[in-house]
Image (tube, rainbow, N blue to C red; front, side):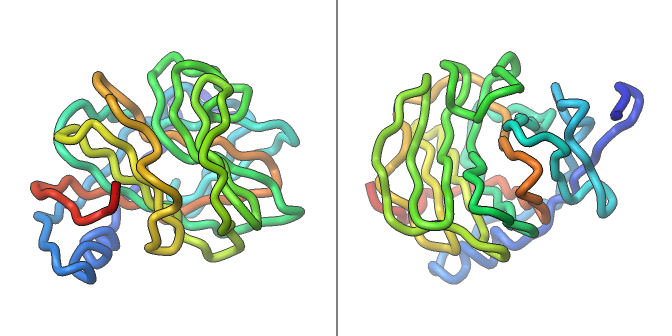
Length: 202
């Protein structure tokens, strides 16, 4: 069981900078740490110097970063370190008071993409939209681009945009978030703050 005094820090790598350089873009790269994880479930398990998260529950559990974004352009990636029995983890953003014992996107406090081994959907307030072919396996990379200048959220799988712009009209403060169960392990998170307009499609 994790106790409040146990702090989980996630070291931010610079893989996002490589992602944008491959597209001919040159963001200013910063190396950051997340502070203690917000609202983590006692069933969440952190390892690898807190760079990896898994879960002891068969049910979905939500984990949030403790730094909310409210302006600028942010891109971060997560890798699938373990993927057993074709679960459907969800990746995205949420408010701090999101439900933490259901899949991300089930309530009106989260905006997410959930994905299995064949396809993905966007979900907010339990509304599923934009089914898109292309799933994940062990080793897949999930990228999220939160752009407050355009007020949008875009998802990528293995450096390819997954579906159209997922969500528009975003305002306020949002935490990076994931939901997972015992069949998934996610790790190697990255985060870079960008000072540019990207070339992703609408």
